[in-house]
Image (cartoon, rainbow, N blue to C red; front, side):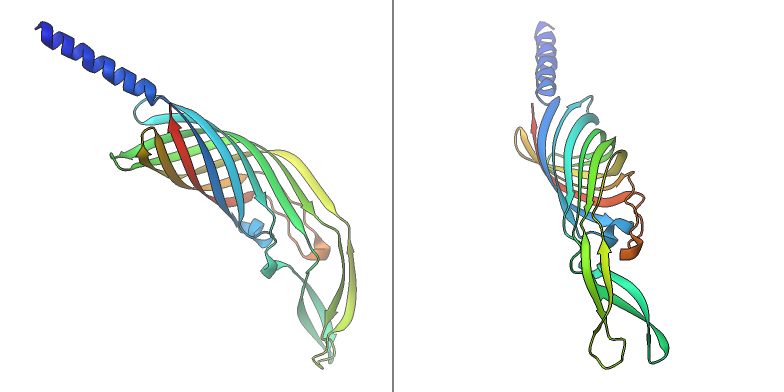
Length: 235
C-alpha cells in the first residue's frame, strides 16, 4: 500500500513538473500576406513579422499576446491604370492608361490578444483553431503623381498626349481595431522547440480614402489572408 501511495505521488509530481515546463511559450513568426477585396486593387502580397508569448491554461486552451508588423509596399501593377473616355473617329471609346509613376506604401503595427483551442492532438502533430482581437496603428502613403497621359485617339496606332495628371501626395494615419480567425498546425521538432504553420483571415477596420483622379475607390476594411511560419519554444 505504501509503495502504491509513493508511486501515485511520484506520478503526480512528474506530471505537474512536465505541465509547468510546458505551461508558457514564446515564439517568432514570419508572414506572407495576400491582400483581399478592394485592398488587392492597390497592393500585391506583402509580409509581416511578429513575436508572441503565451500561457497554456489547460490541456486544450491557451492564451497569448502578439506584437506584429505588417507591410504592403508593392503596387498591383495590373490595377495601376486610369480609365478615360475619348472620342475616336466620332465615337466614344474607353481607354485604360497605365500609371507608372504611382507609388504607395501601407504599414501597420498591432498588439493582439489570442485564444487557441487544440481540436486534434497527436504526438507528431497538433491542430488548433484560433481567434484574436486587437488594436493597430497604421499609416498609408500615396505618393505625388505628375504624369502625362497618352492614348491613340486618332486610330492611327500612334499615342497622342491627352491629359496631364497632377495629384498631390496623400498620407493617412489612424488607430483601428482588428481581428482574425483561422487554423494553426504545430509540429514538434526537438523538445522544447516546435514549428507552427498557420493561415488566418485578418481584418483591420481602417479606411483608405478614394482618389477619383486616379480611379481608386475607397478601402473600408483592410482584408487579408495571413500565412505564418513560426518557431515556438516551450518554457
